[in-house]
Length: 217
Image 1 (cartoon, rainbow, N blue to C red):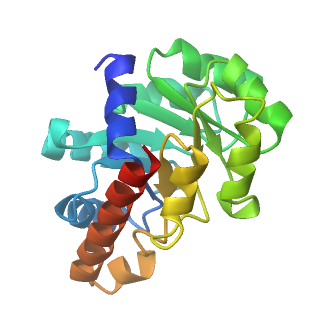
Image 2 (tube, helix red, strand yellow):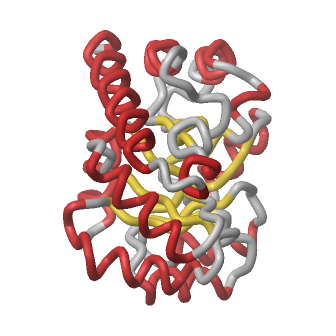
């Protein structure tokens, strides 16, 4: 898939589930529950066991039903690994120049991590299509609004600190989308086999994002 189309789909979805699965099998089941709950943006982190194999299995199972990416990239070699596995977007929690340049050169949609204004600008300059504001819990929606003053053209996506109750504040501040991890898919529910509850949480999140996006227009 071409990068502009990927970014269009991610923006339309407005929500990326950031999955740090406890095992390969449980991660696949977690994603299945999220998809049943209406979540389309799926990011499998490299902190997930057998992450590349998980992505290959998800790509085979869901295909174009989901927008599949890999996150927590910290090494250059992971760029090609993720691309070969079937990821169509890449995410890093940091802005390390060598890694960022490799991500940008991949031709895939990229999100590089930043917090300070200098980091945000650097990430965007190095080729980040959307800057991952991480950890979002450290700053909050008001910080996005402040960054939009000097950087109105830089798309921002907070990850961490995003919940059903505050997602409206994030979109009101002007975010491209939001990333949610344990708030959206608690690992303890997966370990206990409570996938119906994950579906319910996913449905609530998706609805909250839809309402927030409509209100922010």
